[in-house]
Length: 436
Figure 1 (spheres, helix red, strand yellow):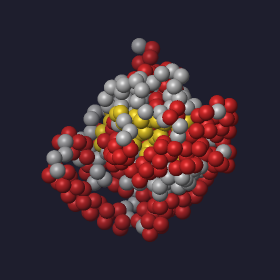
Figure 2 (cartoon, helix red, strand yellow):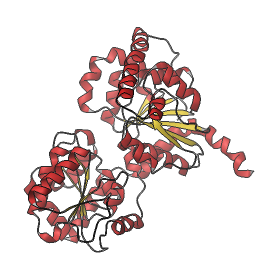
Figure 3 (spheres, rainbow, N blue to C red):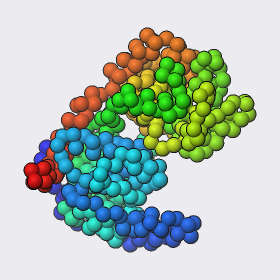
Figure 4 (cartoon, one colour):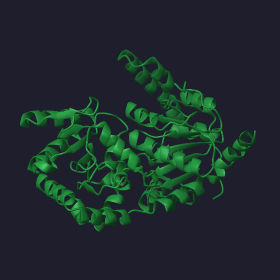
């Protein structure tokens, strides 16, 4: 695909209004953060004083940990295709920074994203001068996109999507957001439905294509990853364990009730809370029932029954050690979370019925294995017991679920082809250094 040129930059009334209001709003946010004792270095990053990054550089921005994982997948994919560049990652919170810290290559940098005031985003763009600005999922920041377009920096929406709950709000401000969307060089949407949502917002159809979800190109962990996790948490090589990932606080009661129904032989579970509130909810429920709970941050002793994964960046390794995976976010109305990663790690996946944020993967998995969707403690306990106790059934379900997902190589090829026009310079710059 050839590079797509952005339209000439013509400021609209909405642009001028935003440029006037945004600095006031974000300075107030900065003042509030300073009063609350925020880290001065982080506040500098919010004002565009990001760490230096050597060129050629690719700026990748995502809201939190999930988007940072997808951004890291894209970087790994492009580097595997022979492109040589440094990655500058930005995210909006500590969870995103903690996750990406584990995947930084030498020369890569990470930072909190500058708040969307024109002066601050310009400062970051001038410091990094990226070959492209990659916005993962839905991060349509008007000042950032305008500043990049003015500098001739292509803006790419990768693994692009608009959450169903956000669609009505975007429709209300369509006339305000349309100029921003039209400045995006290309939208690489997760699905045809997401592509149509961007077109409905005003993105030119010829700049929108269905490329797939970057979570599908997650590197398959080696057997050593699961083995190392098992050793770290004092879990024997043949001990069966089920892993609950991204659990919310209002889903803790369901999981605890299911756990209580299981026979003693199957009561080995690792729970990765989505937020501290979920961790506290599990600990409270366990204390009420007299269960012994271990934390990953401590050194777990052999024989634990319920382990709370209170570390960051280890969920993938935990999935690689799992007999069965349960993904939270869908048992209550949170829209669900990543269903792909546990499958790539070799664990069949169970999930709840509320999956608005994980379509179309949830639909495909639901069609392939309807019993994977559970909504009561009894159903969850029955399914965990069946899949953990019958290895033939477990492998059959895993095979069906794998077959329902898009081919990761096809997704990777679409992204590699889409980025080729902007990454050629990265390949050309690197050649002299390899021969020197």
